[in-house]
Length: 168
Length: 102
Image (tube, rainbow over all chains, first blue to last red):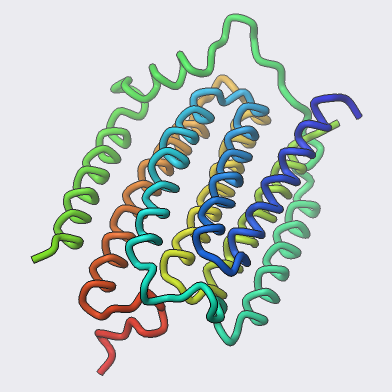
């Protein structure tokens, strides 16, 4: 076990523990803060997978925008849902069973598929994933159409959000 | 020693935790947090498959970027709906949101 493995295991453990705190923390504001830790752990995973651009986008978009938006929403809606009451559905036990069964099923499928033995292909020295990603995203022969559609979707969603939340 | 299966099992665990959060929480904002965890698990899968298959084919990362955009759109609309419901019905509990029920 080398240092890379140790770092991966540490990041995975921190991410999973904080994700668990996100879904179980009795105070919602604590859940939102744990969500930031979990999202940061996912960003670390992207770094370990040589996806540097996605790691930066993860920090900027998820932590900088989405998590802060969550905290805003929690603070704005704080009065109606006290932190003391039960935060769980009455049937949370079924949810736990379903989650555990889902994990067991996915792991079983994975071990059965034989994909686990894939070795890590080395990146060529002159290959930069960020350059390649940037070119592919705006190349007419590749992904410019999905990229533009995603931009329009985001614009429509943000206008829709303003309209929905507008105070008349 | 770390190979593809470690990342996939990690993502599966994160997805299952998010699923549990979505199904068990009462507060609509907490349900959205669970959805965020699930989307992140999917993104880890996409990036891990990109890295462990052919890294010169960048499709996995492009797909992850699209998922980022859709997640941002989803959370913006979702939180706007929660705020609007809070103003009109004075509740954020998913069980109480039954305006369409006859």
